[in-house]
Length: 501
Image (cartoon, rainbow, N blue to C red; front, side, top):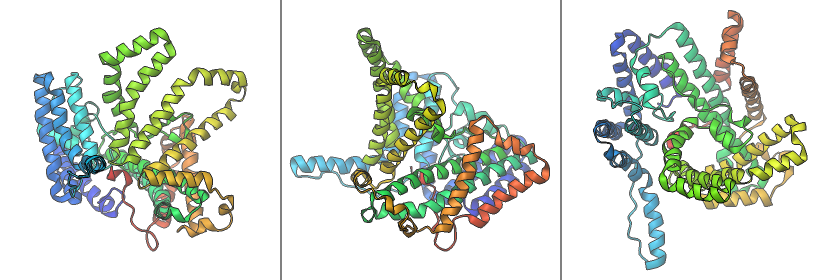
């Protein structure tokens, strides 16, 4: 029962809306809790016991930390235990076996069959953030376990986030706002915008991406490059589309969820890209990993020592020590694969290089007088950032680091421009009609994003239009999803990508 399915959109969500609205205000949050646990059970079955255990652990830990701060690390390790064991045990066991096999010709660790509970990576980070906020007295420990249970299991956020903070979301969840026609219309509008991005673009591109990545040995560098670009677009349209559905669902209930994307492909640098992409994860890592490490005594002492000799390299040292664990955590959070760890260090290297080379890049920009052509230079920056992101996503999607490296080498050494016009692209599972639909949908999303990037509130602008024109736009998007969505013959149902992380 994923967010884009008819079961969720036309049965589960309407039932939740009706039950919520019929319930007295002070009991409405109980309805959300009931539907959240039912949603979780429908997808995970008996694995619901894991989120229940995590909730109890987090609840007791929060009260303990409020009374005795010294238990913070112990409580965090308790909350992390299930995630680390279920998600990473086989990864560490397999790599441990390789080391022991090389040294002692033995493989002492047995691999185990694991079934991952839904959303464990998301609710674990939310729980840890909750405990740390209690430690720093930003919030008080919740005394009602049901309210904490709703925070950790809220059905719109449990599959793909966003990763929420109790201080920002808590009161919103329990207020019991009435569902007005304005909220309902706004929520449905946002939901269909998400479906538009997912079903017209992401799900259709999945056919091409899967074909090439599953049989990359059969394709030249041009096709691999097209597939890497297609996957980057697919991932963005899929993830941001899902966030639109999630945030739209929250809007219906009067619950404001944090935005997770802010037009990342208009970014001029990689750092800016990550401030606009998966914002809730980046904010969590910044708040709970980067700042504590950067502010700890040994790191401050070392960076201060280096800064005395050279101010710039002192700043680089401080950035390196803070960013290294952030990007390691970012990579391995996505999953127990070396390609994900490489993905994290890829961005760590790019960002650290940009900091280290800043004096020279500023000097070169001054020498070339690039400020005279700001538009051209900005387009160059955006294009460069997009290229670096596509390369990163190539490794992210590849089934292992070795395969990613092989694909990248094919891209560099076997690039055949003729593949663009000799019909090769039409052998990848999509026909001309598919490419036309993708192109038209992407153009529509681009122009909406461009308007928002320039400060326009497109949703508010549409709301101010005359009623016939406003509903013409709404119906056009709905009809596009119904008529041109990627379903039916030739299309397999596509699971939510980030739900697997």
